[in-house]
Image (cartoon, rainbow, N blue to C red):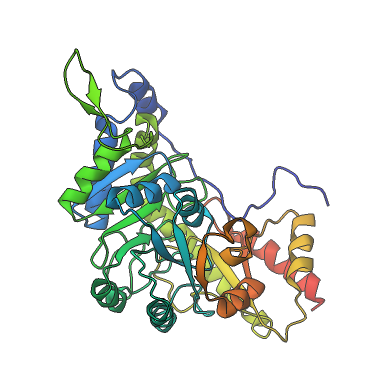
Length: 383
């Protein structure tokens, strides 16, 4: 079957009810980038996340980039989860830094404390001194960083949380993503498939005033205004990471609907869980016992003894107008990083990668879409 306009994508922006009147007003303002609407968006994010400061920028990768530049380390050595998008490992490579790949828990897709302790021990044996740890909060879930903080503090490692999957999520202890209780900063992406979109955009939250001021400086080439005869000075090289006012206006609109988006996704997740119980012997649903999170992705983990074969299933779904995805290919499998990787742990990451598959989940979907996807699984398994 050919793709059509009714193709069910794994992720999708929801811009229904967008206030175009406000967008038109934004375009008539004197400053249409990095202005007062961006500041209002920052204040709203800080209020939601309970962080002291927020800096918005043009995308999630820029948010990560800015957090690294703001620390001004001469030799970057970063611990990152092996199950990860390529953004952080690529920017570290471009900055001539080094990467330490930490394994993940195959039940969560996130770094666990045992894996982290193991990689720290390996670093000490090889006399490697990492200065960054970039934990990923995966698929909407939240990683408890309390124990990680003590280890990082004792080893002079800055924690920068990657919260791109989990904007709006709360942990079981009530801890909300982005409050930076156990970290220097948290980064977010507002790409179209994320929980909230600004078309393209990102943000950084922090509670450290000096760090916040550094982020503000870095966001616009690090240029400091001086006087009319000598218009600016450049304390350090940087780039343009600014967000447009129209993107911030869309972000404010999306923030007002965030709870609605969360409820819609949860309703779909509950329907998935109810219907997919019949497939228990074939796969496990990730996070099925933690339904209070903001569900960014609906992930299934295929069991080894199942007759479900991932590649065949993904092709079958695509042929029937249903999109699926893999989150993510382990970083050590990308040859581009072979000269940047100092250490790597990969066993659990490979197991997770081989079993992981993402099915459609976004607020434009309906229960009928879940029924249809369920019927395709029945057909594929010939039940």
